[in-house]
Image (cartoon, rainbow, N blue to C red; front, side, top):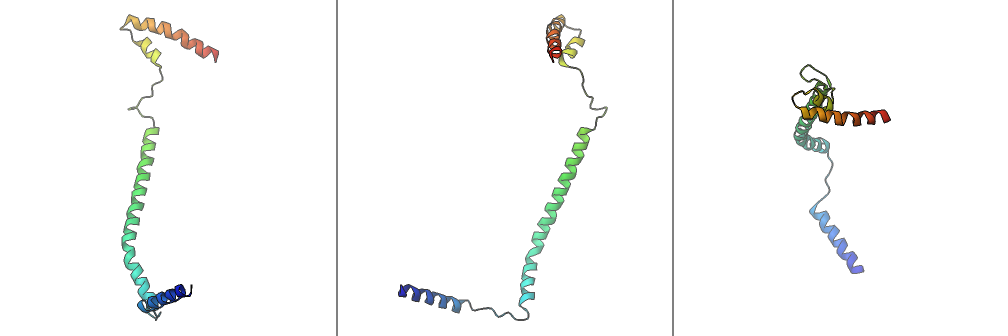
Length: 113
């Protein structure tokens, strides 16, 4: 066990010699901040771009939601059912038979509710 402690002490001694303590002089903090600030412009550019992209995406989503929710003359709202559309179609005699068959079943379903 004593041998392991001597090896560890030798390792720490070699580390201290290889990497001496940095004396914190009067220029230590300004130089440190200068190094930090030199790396920030790239991060700021990406953050600005991402913020603009998110803002533009949100604006587009709101505009599309407003456009979809507003009724307009170009987008009529259909209130008739499929059976009503078939009933209004006078071209085919079989359609009238289908309407007569489907309509009573639909009315029975509404009456039971």
